[in-house]
Length: 463
Image (cartoon, rainbow, N blue to C red; front, side):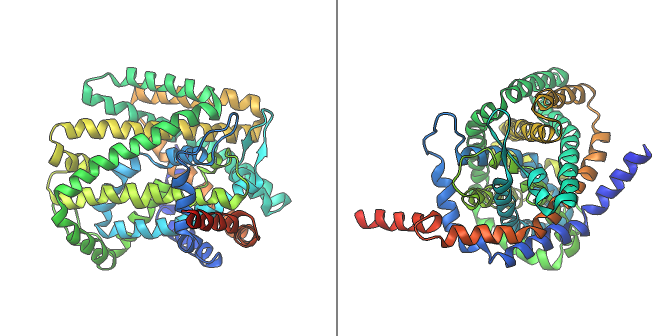
């Protein structure tokens, strides 16, 4: 218990000021060093990503959008629905502003992670691409790179045990709204997860290709109905967000007041938990894609953070703030999203939230489970990884049966802090390589970016 307490204390300390310095400051440095690529080339990035949804699949190849959707499935989770209201409750409406700031910086961080992931990825024994921080961190140097790479893979692989177990409980608990037994629900979820993960990335991507767009559209549509029902409040919401970001917020409803520092702290933490920029956890999904250049797939890193945080998290925040439920007394922060949906949909709101939270969490479980399998393969080989992958559904079933995930949460933040530290230090010191790739991609005559622009101009001229 002493070790667990130390890990918990370390996690509590790290997810305060240190996370702002490392991820916020690190993201700002990367953005400035690379010349604000997520802003200068935002339109191009969106054209390269959203435009790929209907691209044809090639037999035996993973589409760039499929790799991105698997990564997005891992990033989009309960934090988008529950985490944002928690940030508002503890940091005030101003926390939303800092979520946006960390997301804008996070787009560049994720851009760098994906570019490095593609550059350093390798083919495994089955001929499939695998990669991620565990590989690209080795670019730091023979000795320190090996320590960072192995350390990242080990702690990430272990961190996913409590992470996926706790998320399994969250997914199973959604069926409580229908009177289902949580133990049985957990067992069914564990079996589904095991079956999907046993099929490797092709099976995972076949599920996330359908699940991610479906759940995102479903949730966004429901939240937009709430926003339109309170459309006259939207100007006030924007003023509240920007004003409180720099002045703090007085106590309201059942919630205590929040300082500017609280707004920054909770906005930063929830933002990182939501899009995982700086964590490096979703890079393995991008590394499975067939692409002609690391920077082309890096556009999907920008896309991933934009969809996860700027779109989905913002819509949750607007729904909670515009509906006014955040000022009501007697509501816990975790109930705010449910209260917002119930304010418009009535009793159906609880069912809607239960279904969407389940879809969000389930998609996270299967994609993160695959990423854990990749870490196991990097450390101990392909055969071991195919056995290790079943550890995750086993712990999901156990956690759902006993419903006690306190210990798991105790070690989750601490382990996640370790992998963030390893990854961010590596990305910052390797940013020169990203700049070289960026210069090559945007400046090579007749190839990559310039070829895309020329093709676009040709299509315009032929219309």
